[in-house]
Length: 116
Image (cartoon, rainbow, N blue to C red; front, side, top):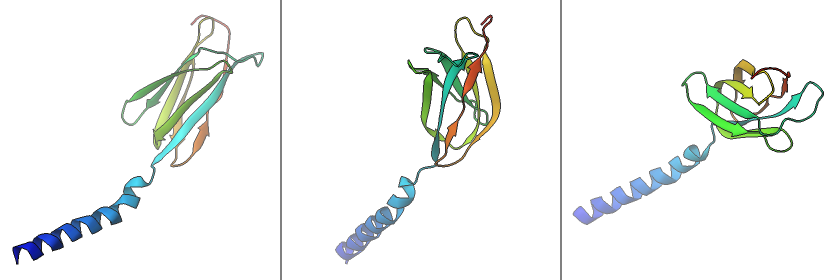
């Protein structure tokens, strides 16, 4: 009798795991991407990009590549701000961004020459 109960329990747990797996695999994330340029539309490589989750205060950092592009992949849907800085340019900021599930949110920036 005890063996039968144990067998049933194992089957129930296995069934629950199979049912729960698809729900756990669903993504609640998106991506925030962009290109950083100067006022003459030249790309700005090696710019520092800081992404802040304004609901949780969590930050992520990236650096633009040789094409001036940056990518924040698998970002949890929510509210964000982006701060960009590069030597010889004024800092650039945008807030009030909302990222939805499965969205590729493009946030391009044009930096002005000036003090950092």
